[in-house]
Image (cartoon, rainbow, N blue to C red):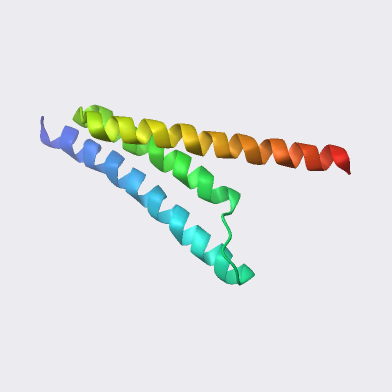
Length: 95
């Protein structure tokens, strides 16, 4: 693997780590603002984006353990966003 390929691979991995950090940071900010523990919708978006980057990183590294872990997380994050969207639609149609 040449230098530019390694650099690109590292950037993909660090982007994934950044979004995973942001989900906890954002959750902390929202919880502090509300004075209670809250999981905001952006937590799931940051999780999904971070998962995509880390899954790409794992595939490029050919790390089966990491691939399986990120694949299952991706499904869970996507499902949570789907449930949130469905709940918002129900609330809009009820009002």
